[in-house]
Image 1 (tube, rainbow, N blue to C red):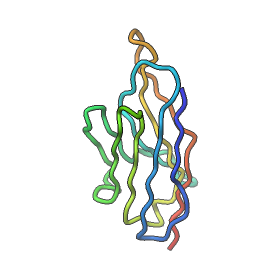
Image 2: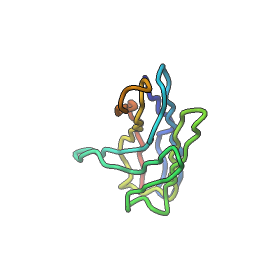
Image 3: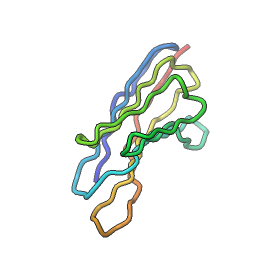
Length: 120
């Protein structure tokens, strides 16, 4: 199982970026997907998650600015980031709960991380 993230880069404050993350490989199903981030010297923190039903959960610091979505058929999760601030600078990691077979519990899988840098 692999999670391939893309879409990071350098943007000015107030700008926008869209991150994508696709799950690939051999598995039975994809459950909740989400995005986390880790800034230099800080712990990894939750940004947003989305269930297969489409129900979402956001960290307070991104509410109203970021939108998480997914395409179940493509096993892909997106993070639309608007009104970016310098404090959003971090490595963003996608996460997915994946069930390898119908008889096993879900496990957590992580993408490789994509760097988002927001300049003043």
